[in-house]
Image (cartoon, rainbow, N blue to C red; front, side, top):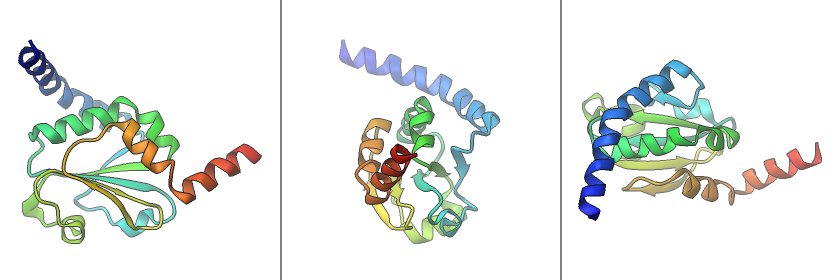
Length: 148
């Protein structure tokens, strides 16, 4: 029964993810941006970039990761996250040159510009937010919000 369920879920995601990505771009919430022209220095001390690399936008891991991220945008926006995507290895973007992905890769970068996490498989928003919530600068942000 499990293979059938996995097939149904994969089919559902493949059919609905392009619509979700289009809706996210149309929403213009600022969560998802193209990483092919992005400069990490522009996010320094302002945002926490999550960079999602894949060799193609059709990569099932890329599609799964984007679906997971778009499912809980509010939690990511609350933590000053911006998602950068790069699915064109031929373009040799600055992000690819700096982070050197092999196939699919998820990279979490802190506000200080340092690489905090590299994963070769999709992560849930919960896993990402729990990791972010342990950062010293995030703890300071939460404390400052409590005081105000």
